Length: 232
Ligand code: OAD
Image (cartoon, rainbow, N blue to C red):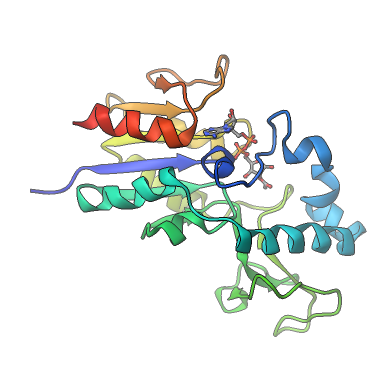
């Protein structure tokens, strides 16, 4: 018999209990730092050093954190289900937990690319997390090396692939995203009508909780066990 297919849409909340701060919670990243200066293409053109410093610190931090129970359960579910993870996260914790199909909508901290042609597959390369990207470091085409990240103002090239998988879902689960950043947030509308849909998030989601979703109001690590109980 074919395995049922669970599609997860994850955001910063799933990695919060691994020690990576979210963006919009009270102690979130965008409370301390200016997203438009540090995570936008205009910001990079204006002050590339500040943007590289910000991402180098996040890259290095990735060496100090571990996947948590929620990441691991998503990986273990592959024993019984077909699993696709569409993530807005740029960390590599889903892969390190063992998940095999992970689509990164907003890029990956563990990779670099060229400033001139960032989407050309040949330009996208793994880069050691403990080696800072410096001003003057060059991609193969001679342009400044940059993190492989989708900044505000840039095209989200993985949307078509993500939409494709969300449409194939038999079960759709959203974990730890405020659902305010588009186009990623719009993916909830592509899940087939009538399938079971869940959202795991410890906060009220009034105003953003889409129709037809069951809200498991808990942090990811506790909420994932409650979700799995729903399946049995
Ligand atoms: P946000 O910081 O906007 O939202 C995090 C969500 O996680 C909120 O709904 C929290 O309530 C929830 N949350 C907090 N702790 C949690 C926990 N322990 N378990 C489960 N949920 C928890 O982060 P995202 O929605 O991921 O993009 O942000 C989307 C995009 O905005 C990011 O990918 C990033 C950011 O700017 C770019 O940088 C391009």
